[in-house]
Length: 303
Image (cartoon, rainbow, N blue to C red; front, top):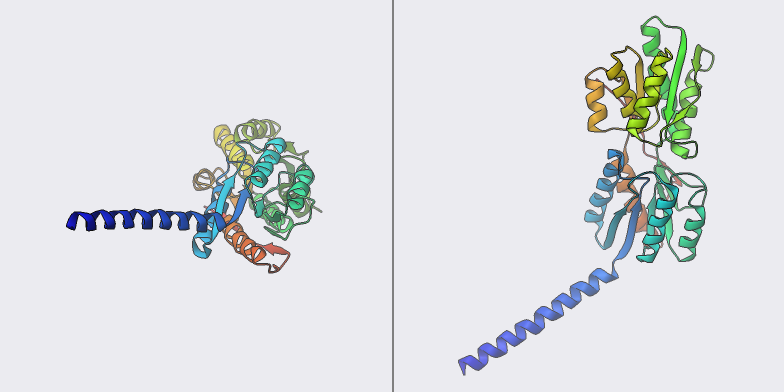
């Protein structure tokens, strides 16, 4: 008798476990899917965006979240990431676009499939629900003003200044360069032709070394990789060239603390990710999001 009861209890437990597992799987499958697609995996900046996303997902619940990114900045690889997200059943894509036009065809296919687009850091020239980013022109002006003040403090009122950026298409870095150049309007300083390193710190270092050989008094880096290259070139040259840049990472802070970079314009990538997921949740609930452009701010980090 006891043996029969034990067998019945075991069977009942097994059925209950299977039912519970099935219910959990059903609940998970009913979750809405949100993908973060960034320009690459190289910069710590994107890791911070991802961290902000993960924090919001944990707080909100009911979202299946995944971060996709090419290993390097490459339009075709980013298009592949967008296509993979759509194939994976994405409901919302948070996107940091490489450029304004390169991925628009893929985005149209995504929205035709019912996917909503929210931009973080860098928007494409294609309609989205919201853009969460730094006011990059204003931040570029701040970077230029920081360098200009430092040059004046050294008694310099003229000289050449180098600029290293990602590429000529990425909206965020183009805007930063625009602001940086604006800060020097009306001065006797000459801003040299921009060099593009595709965000690669090693390439930026070589370009910066070339600028230093030309006798520049300052170099501006428009993103993390560019700025790391600027700092490393100044360090290697043992030169007093003033380096100013963008983004925040352990390497950048080390270069600033050691005196090879004056400062960096630190964005708030965690805010981009955190608020981006919150906006995605609203969109999934059929709510509108505002403002259309969410300025996530910038801070000047010095030694």
